[in-house]
Image: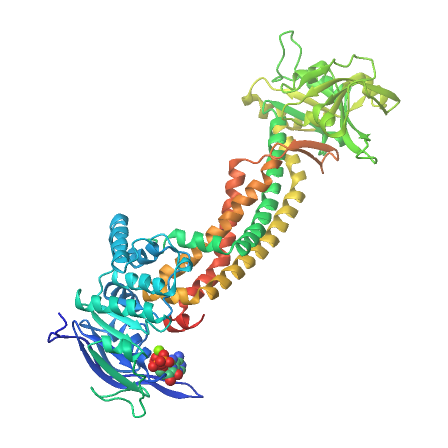
Length: 242
Length: 388
Ligand SMILES: Nc1ncnc2c1ncn2[C@@H]1O[C@H](COP(=O)(O)OP(=O)(O)OP(=O)(O)O)[C@@H](O)[C@H]1O
Ligand SMILES: [Mg+2]
């Protein structure tokens, strides 16, 4: 299943995001061109401040580029209105945060059900989907727990369930193991691999952890806002080999 | 469509109990003030409206605004008695009551300086014209004796009792009976024999007012016109209902003051709700960002925070209603600004009064919630996610 098909799901051309103020002018991302195909698992690596999150946010349409082109799942993101973007993201993107970002007052089940509130599914179907997603991440017995009653690893698994419950085409994860201990990190990486291999989801993951990056099929590096050519690593890149 | 579930708002409110409680309490107190005033005015209206029989006409001296400053002579009364359109009872007696009204000062332990009480002299016909008034204890005063019958509110509120002797006029008067005035102002009056009281007050010829019953509702206005156009009589006539309705104006200063205080408080409460909601928006900034990433629109965010503010104020509104509920039926008195005497009535907390309170609270909540909700909806995703 990991073999990439012809049609890329993500295409960027000279994608640029610059921040220009009176007191500074930075390129968070500069002329990044990348193609990611259906079923790929790509890791984005690079030093802090190199633009990894920026690229991920642009792909998720959480932010607007200042230059270049970006086409995701056949949509030119720059042409979509704000409400179209919201609906599009709900239907096609599953986003996983470093700090989990669960809603503290809602239970695991309710957190996972939340994105389905925007669909036409009935309440029963929503709860059914949410329950199955939680079972998939191994939390079928924690449905009524609130985030506060769970460990970080469990929280991140709930967040993964929330990201996959809408059956999105694309899973985007920004340092999903950054706040986790080694064991929990392994669980999370294992889940992402399963999503990629068993369910054919395209996964793009930002990570600082070379061990995590190795689970991905592809690694692309960024440096000072530039996406390095395929196979190249930053000059003084000294990955800690695990 | 409510995308973000209501339970999300409810749980956020219960998650920060102290803030929610404080804000809701502020709203509750505001509602309580407003409702107390409404209940007071409502009670006064009920009392005064019940006092006026639409079939009956009150005759005062021309320009006399109240019975207390009116003078009607016995000759004028005889003249009035002969008019057509006045009902007659089974014995053929015209249903008209000549009355004298004066004020006495009633002293009690709680009110050493005394309160003003209406003292009314009347004949048995005067009682017949007051259907709601019933003697509940003791006996009627006897003509030619210094005996009086007191309204039940005076017993309840000022500790007046059967057999008690009161000094006024030229001697001592004994309370021989207690009457229940129903919902009317007779509850806070004292009744005595017309001739005895008039003689005592040196007003044997110059009395206060005449109460008449018309033969039918259709004859009420013609009767009034007939009396008022008679220059020799020189009187004002109005329906009893109109007379008492005009006295409702005695509640106006209280109503105005109460409404004013409630209004000022409501501004404060709105700001408190606004402050609470701004804090909530700030605290949940990254949560707002997350909701947007999940696909919720700015409108859903706006609605969610507006709803939360409305829920918060709803709690306050219901609490406010509960706070004033014990007032229901409580008797109180106001000095009438027309008659300068005490008028007793009960607070009336009607469902309508309560709905007013809840709606008032909701308005405070929504007004206070608009700006914070708008600021939540305006947030950009990335900055919202970054703030912790
Ligand atoms: N709102 C902003 N205003 C100005 N500069 C910004 C803003 N957001 C990001 N940047 C800059 O853009 C650059 C890239 O940021 P980005 O968050 O993409 O880095 P990153 O590779 O994800 O780093 P990290 O590994 O530390 O998360 C940084 O130099 C950052 O300072
Ligand atoms: Mg980053």
